[in-house]
Image (cartoon, rainbow, N blue to C red):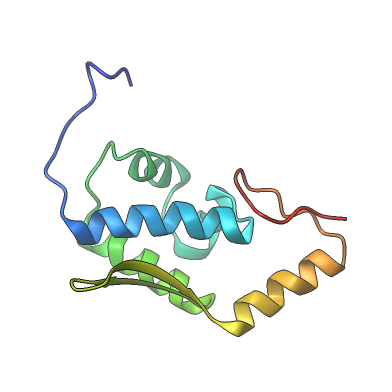
Length: 116
């Protein structure tokens, strides 16, 4: 979609935090959009449009994404006083460490870890 034809919609901070968290968590943990799609039941094209802020997510999409991330040990937190942050629990970090130590590629664009 070109910049001139891009649909602009009103976005609230919760949605913006969700999108930022989705992209950041995917990059850090080496998850593809397909991984998130498989775990959340949200289609890859929908995730792609959401990450590019070309659509405003429906309530059920937000719930599914939050549930997916909570289930893999990631909490996306929007605190009106402190801002937005991503909390990754130790179990999720341990799984990432195990993947890395096995030499599995962890290669999502922007990921900080690469396979051995």
